[in-house]
Image (cartoon, rainbow, N blue to C red; front, side, top):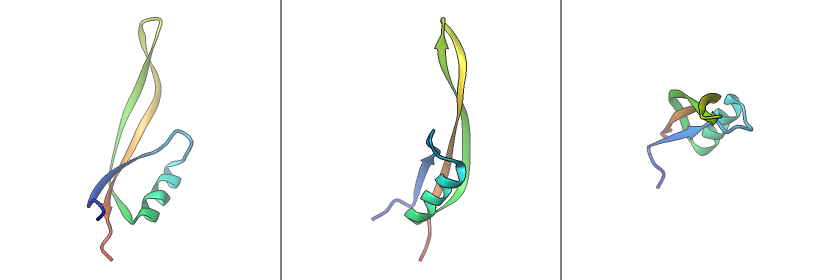
Length: 62
């Protein structure tokens, strides 16, 4: 049995559209989105690395 809700993270090697297509293929529809910055340390200082994007997927009723 599939979960009713699941979070999908946009991978570094894929576009947002590709992530949404992956969700659709798995039977989920996007119903939420969250973003947060990812930092790493350079010489002891936090430096921006990238943006982490996640979509909340709701299981589609068929």
